[in-house]
Length: 66
Image 1: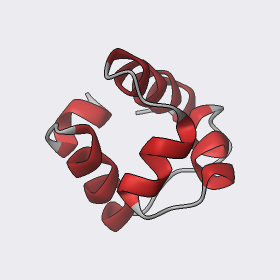
Image 2: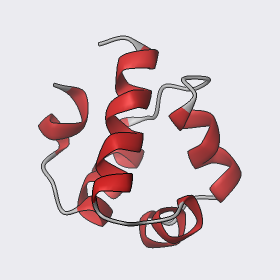
Image 3: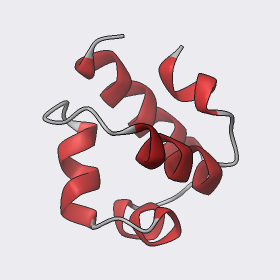
Image 4: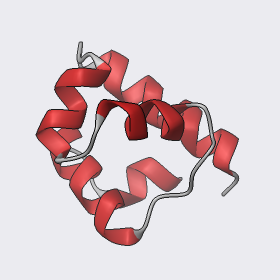
């Protein structure tokens, strides 16, 4: 999966749940700045970050990377 595709999926899932970047970052235990960089495709998260994001969004990791 490309960084851009992951970035779009992450943002789509966050917005569908009515979460701000700040709220999702807090739930996932990451900084808002890091989340913002993920959402524009600047970074590829490690598996532990993927798990934290998936848990915070209430989805399986596969939903983030499909």
